[in-house]
Amino acid sequence: MGIPGVYPSLVGSKVVLGDPAQLALWVIKGQRPLSMPAGRYSTQMQQFGWMKPADAAALFSYLRSNFGNSGTPVDTATVAKALRQ
Image (tube, rainbow, N blue to C red; front, top):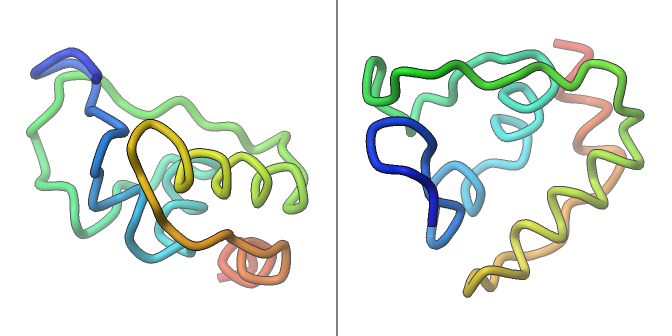
């Protein structure tokens, strides 16, 4: 459910359920997605640059299909392509 003003909720999150490339850039490189208004949260996303695209795709697929979410899986190629940008 997150912590209001500190950590966003994963439930129904536009970031989690939106463009998988934007999610990859947020989690791995710390780039805030356009769907998350600037300044809304006082904390910054930790960077998980050590994650391999296959591991990140598995994590994103899990987030998108749990916590009440029903998003489609994310494939490794989508994550790898996003990270090359």
